[in-house]
Length: 580
Image (cartoon, rainbow, N blue to C red; front, side, top):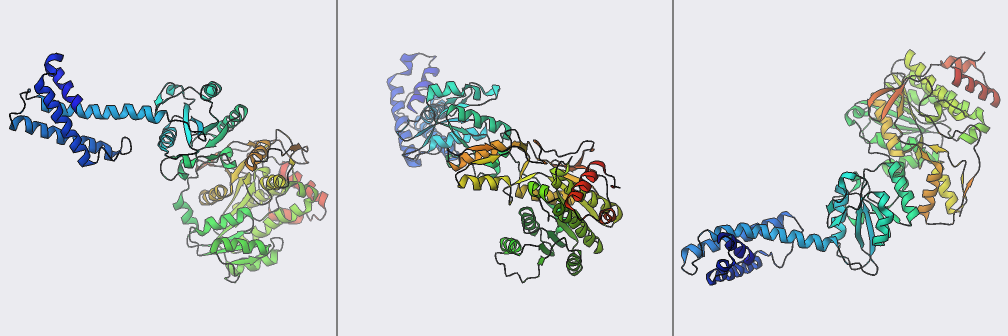
């Protein structure tokens, strides 16, 4: 406030320093300083510092300037103590307000941007100069811990428009390509990625760069998982979900509710990874009854426990039944009379089915036909067949059998009441028997981790994501279509293996390449050659049509030998004609 009086007087007297420092002006300076100190103490501005730029701080600074200004005006016009110009007390509060805000900004920007490094503090380079980066820098700078803090020492961002931008006292040093220079200057040991929307592909590139430079890599989780502004406590190491880059699913809850709420729903394969998660997602939409069907009694027990917290197995919602048994299926369907059916029961292990193709035929083809026939017999409204990306241009028994299941479903759509659709997607992260499970078990045993080929890559989804999109596809699917879920960018299996090894912190685990197995592809496809792709009305779902095959043609094939099953399924999957 004293400086504001001197500045105002200097301007009032045409920048004449002699007049601005007259005794009466200096007396006014002393009075203003005393009033400022008393008011600041009374309002808590001196002893109770607030968060920088907060409403509390700005309001207290403004109130202090206003009170002191009014007091100076009263003193000037109601007493003869001062002979200063009458305009001076009106100008002083404005100068004081601007000066206090400017001084706070300059001092705090310098102090917060350059914290002292303690012996156990960790120097961090923040990657990302957007809102996430700003919040993280602010939170790290405000950390009052006495030991083991993350201390920001530099900021990088690939956006050329942000070069040289000053953020929380740190000037953006350039893009990730400048990291090596930044490390030489700052001796940072950690790179914190503060861009929750960063693509998985770019994140993998940053991961590789950090590994080459010997940096520990931390990331902020997606915005939807942050509770409030980003903070240092939110930083965590990379996980598989980050590298897969799966996005937040936007579901049309009203359309899903219309297809499920108040209806009787049956899920086959309800003890499996997809079937059990489907059941949990379906339960959220309050069906009139949810029936869980599986041939594995222990798996049914586990699913019911996850749904209700109690698994007494006696509430009438479980059906212990093998889809290979058409008579048993008919009894279940006639008793339950479901209106919506999700068919997730299947054999799915590629290598085993290559050795036992007749099993794939009996479960994935004949079993699907049995479920379709049972559903048709009770006039289901909606039938959803869970398929796989291996059904697109199939090269293995699993793909052949699931392609035929898609064709069977399309045929029922044409000749029977109700809506029959298939949903095609790739590998599900963490599903029972998946590559993730196998790698984790190998790492726990001390290795080696076995990968078929260094270039093999696959599409991955998270189990909840896949299940949510299946429900959405069921709600919007047109009769007979194969709904194909957007799987994002395929990920190399070798990257998955290395990431799991990194997460295990067992650096001595070896990766061994075993060679491609019969029926495997280097890269999977979501669409077969020649399939006409069109939007299904959702940003993450497309649809294609597949040639139909009747259940009668399947039944009349009369296959009872493994090789004949393989040959028949291969022929039907690639030509669409009946083998003669």
